[in-house]
Image (tube, rainbow, N blue to C red; front, top):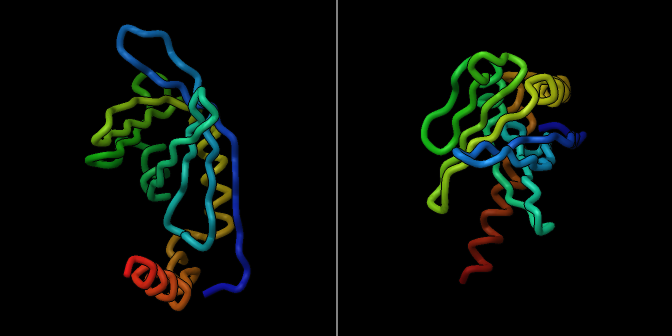
Length: 143
């Protein structure tokens, strides 16, 4: 466990790709916290001021910069014939969406997270006592 805590945030512009419709730009806030060292959160800002948050494995996004990665609800891969773009495909019970974004922007963000918490050191950043306390508090709140 580490005493220091790091939060990294980066704005990004994603494009929602829909068949037979124009591309829709979507503002996204990428964030990373050393308190949850395996995850990256993406907050998609909708046109109504609200946000839709998705949490991804940091390694999934990094792997998707190099080639197809992910199965099921989240898939990430370079855009065919455009190595400068990344495709992010999201599936949930409420729908399906395909986004593209700049590979360099995503890579820069991920590089900053790997500088803060190097690969294979994530485990040492976890605070198990704090996580257990949160779980027990949540169980008591439901009773």
